[in-house]
Amino acid sequence: MFKFHYHDESLIVLANERNDFMRQIGFIPDPVDARQFEDYLYTQGMLVRIDRHNAGYNVWVFDEDKQSSGKQELLQYLENPQNRMYADAVLIAKNQRTKQEKEDRAAPEYKVVFSDQVVQFPRITFLLAICILAVSVPMLFDDEKKIQMVRVFGLVQQELKWGMTLFSNLAFSTQPWRLVTPVFLHFGPLHLLFNLMLLFEFGRLIESQRGALKFFFIFLVLAVFSNLAQFFLGGINFNQGFHIAPASTFGGMSGVIYGLLGYAWMKAEFQPELGISVPSSTVKFLLFWLVLCMTGIMGPVANVCHISGLIIGLILGLLPRKFTL
Image (cartoon, rainbow, N blue to C red; front, side, top):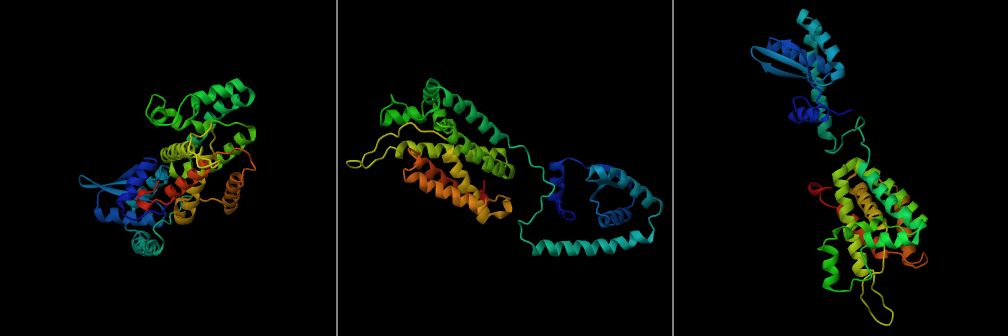
């Protein structure tokens, strides 16, 4: 459960933002009685808020489930506010708050328990998977569909020539989607299955901890930078001298996957309070696979896309805390 701080205004905001569940349970005319009743409920593990209203004080509970029990406690208190247990509760509550404040000061600032946190459905991850399947599955069974999908979603078109005309057609024309959509192209079943599995592994983890908007922004940055890097640098070769040319047709989510790996890896190392962790075995396996693909054993692979995605992911994961994505 969340640890609430006594009379902390941020607590009031937090409670309202989470469920808007404050419920009024009654009214106490005397300020001394109101404070004493608040202390008593604090010792019972019930969080309340006392608001001045006209000549007295309204009493609110933050947990809707405790509204009924809170009302019952208030009725009993109003019948006999002089009961010894209420007076004793004042001292007990003071000691408990002092102890809690010492524990909070001693603990790292980021140490907050989210055991009751509701993990939302990773809708961006799921949407990306649907897009991949919609584009890639037809390509696996029909060569004509493959050509058609590459023409619509690919970053490289055979009719484009190297130079400013090519770059303007890619980034600043009426086809800006080509900066992102190559990630949805997959040219084989294993390629497709492997990337989908890793997308769900990293996507669900990061989206659940950082939220849909931040995850979508991270995806866009990784997709655009890795695609552009592959396009401009993927065609470099050293056969009979150094040659720079547009990369051949490429596609796949792998650049984004390696970017998510780099992001999760750095967050796990340097900001563990965010709750993002990645097994060391996964890091080692994907780095091994990266090197293996660079050897050429696996055939034509968009290695620049992998490397650039990983680098951008590492950078995003190492952003200072105040700029944390």
